Every structure is written in C-alpha cells, then in structure tokens.
Image 1: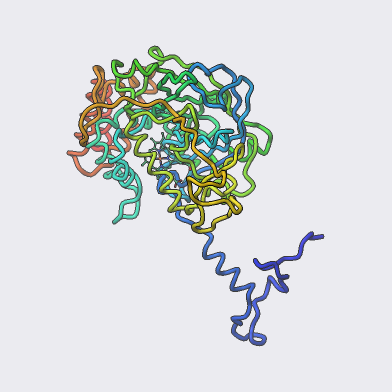
Image 2: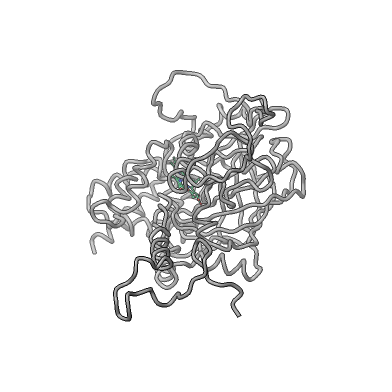
Length: 484
Ligand code: HEM
C-alpha cells in the first residue's frame, strides 16, 4: 500500500497522474490543469550549467581519521589528535568531457575532498596526478578550450590538443604522465590523489612549512590500456560511477592513506626546483612521505543531483593552520572556483546541505540573494554593532609570506635545476621497457592524427629534449603511423 497521496508542489492532492485535463473526450487540453503545467515547467528547469571542467563525476561520504602526529607542522584542529575523525564528502571526476561523457577515457581525474571540520570546511581540490600541464592560471581557459570541443567542428580535435602542447613545453611532464600507464585509471577506487600544488601549514608557534599532499589508494593502482578503455567506454560509459556506487552499497569501503611531504619554509628559496611550480614534483628522496591519516568512503549520496552535481569545492576554503603558497596556479584557482559556484549554483550555495559546515555554525553578516534561507534570525546585518554580533579573531589563518620586487607580468622564477624537460625525462627513465613502449605508442597514436607537420615537429622536439631515446621512439612511431 502506498504511504502517501501524490501532491502538487503546493501540497494539494493530485486526482489523475495518467491523463491530462481536456475539453471533452478527444478535445484540446485545459490551461487550468495545474498538475500538468507544473510537471512540464519543472521538467524544463531540471538542468543547471554543468561544471566548465570536471563536469562528469561521482561522489561519496565518509570520514578522515588521524593516524600520526603532525602537530609540529600545523595547528589545524582536525589534525590535532591521533584517532580524531572528521566527516568528509569526496567527488571524483574526469576533466575534459561534458556531463554525458564516458568514464573510461585517457584524462586526468579530479580528486576533491571536503573535510567538515570544527573550524569550518576545508576543501582539498586535487587530481590523480602530482603535476599539471601549465604553471600560470592565465593560460587555463586557452588550455581547456584546446582540449574540449572545437567551436566550429563541435568535437574534440587532436589538432587543437597537440597545437596547444606544441606551444607549451612545460606540459611535457604531465603529458608523459597522462600518456603512460596511469593515464586511464580502472576506477576511482584504484587511483591515488594528489593535492598537486604546494600549500602552507603553520603550527601553534607560528612556524611555516610548505606541504604537498598524497592520498595513496589502499585498493592498489589499477589502470586500463587504451584498447580496454575504448571497449569499456562503449559498453558501460558509467563504469567509474557503477564501480564506486556498487562497492559502497556492497559494504566494500574504499580507503586512501594520506601522506605529506613537508618542506621547512626556509628551504624554499634555495631548493633546486621552484617548489611553487605545479609542473614539478619534489623527489621523495629530498622530502620523504610522512603518514597523516586515513580517508574512508562508506556512504553513497541519496540524490546525485542534490549532493554531487550541487557540491561546491573551492581551494580557497582553508582552516586555521592551512593556507596558500605563492604557486601562481593555486592563486588563480583561489578566485575561479567560488566564482564558478556563484554562477552555477547561486550566491547561497553554501546553504545546501552538502556544502554547509557540519561541525560548526556559520555566523556572519551576509544576507539575502537568490533562494536565501535566513539562518541568522533577527540578528543585525552590519558590523561593528552594539548587539553582541560575531567578531573577528585577529589571528591570521596562516603565516605571512615575505615578498620583494616590482609588480609586473613576471615569468615563474627559475631555480638551478628548473627547465621544462628534466623531470619529464626522469619519469621516462624510471619506466620499464614495456611501459616506454606503451607510452610512446600512445603519444604517437594521438600525434599522428595531427594535420600540420610543424605542430608535430614542435611536439617531437619536447620529447627529444626530455630524453633522446624518448624523442627517437616517439618520432619513429609517428613516422610509421603516418607512412601507413
Ligand atoms: C588555474 C588553473 C585552474 C582553474 C582556473 C580551474 C578552474 C576550475 C573550475 C572553474 C572548475 C569548476 C568548478 C565548479 O563549477 O564547481 C574546476 C573544477 C575542478 N578542478 Fe580546476 N582549475 C584549475 C586547475 C586545476 C588543478 C591544477 C587541479 C588539481 C590539482 C584542479 C582540480 C579540479 C577539480 C578536482 C575540479 C572538480 C571539483 C568538483 O568535484 O566539484 N583544477 N576547476
């Protein structure tokens, strides 16, 4: 027996949900059929703008538990006690395709975690790759345009993808990563996550450290070959969603161990790589991994739209003890996300349950706007005031950075070992013969489709510069494909 009567949006009972009201049998329909009008009108409004990147994704709830003492480095309350648990929501995503795209594609994966801490929400919005294609945010819209659909052909174009990379030597490291074995994860559970950027941690004594985050999957890394992925993308375009959803429903809860690399702030200037360059890693021999805790996902959202599509992660949601570094890409992202949320979800998106803090309350003077809920009762909406309204702490969230020089559109500062190719070559040289073969074949498969020789040549020059053997193999494979 159904428990409830079907109602309209205003709660009135619906008499007929099978037949529209008509002017006589076989006659035209009546404007007074409120249920029909409401149903069609709501349907027209079901979609909101999809994310301009990372449109397609899957999310789940869980917790983060501290396993090791990091209080010497940060005063963040959610990391201050071994055994402390913090509720989290995570969203994983592909980057380039639209909401309806397939999961099993060669593309970085987003790895975004919202920690609902007692000092406010902390969002760590990372990827499954430790580096990125560019090092200045001013290039981001051009980069993404080159990877998404062409405005004329309406489809992704190898010409555009490789033309952008031809002009972007700093992408060589990430291209090597993407075209290698880890370029197509088998599922969201079987991949690592990285904060990628350098962030700043500050301890209770006010000492600053630079930090990189690494979430290592406890399910083991599993990846797909290009051929396996092509088949899976056709047979189950939702393969990542299916895998994550079903694992959690079965009670198989995926987990990741969080490690950090910690650099004392005083090391940054003299380090052989620019520690704020997102196209570079810090070798673990320089800054070893230190364990912090465990991320576990154990609950699926009940409604994908409300909780996953409307989830809003922003790299500028910091908590005391954690802050930004001068990484230019990170600085650009500090603006881009909340702006996207105001466009995509509206100014009151932080009121939605998935985005609202869960372990603390919000007290501020922001009011009104589209779809406002009043959470402030009758309190004043200005400050300072004489009515015991909320006041500032006077304590900066993170330590100050020393800056020198003149304003200007400067290129990133170069440290002694900085060039666009060295670390790409290091990654290549770490690979087995088989991996090198698959990597160079994958690159050649894409590059050989490019229509202009000069674009191909520019790209080949990057692989040659990374490692002569790397360049030679890609060049040979491209020639073979183009001669056939
Ligand atoms: C300047 C460079 C970048 C800009 C301007 C940028 C901008 C954006 C924008 C506008 C969105 C959509 C947000 C939304 O509508 O909710 C987004 C999503 C995302 N970006 Fe970036 N992005 C940049 C670089 C990066 C990097 C380097 C990473 C990883 C290290 C990253 C990871 C993500 C993730 C994981 C999402 C999806 C978040 C979610 O699940 O809702 N982005 N980005």
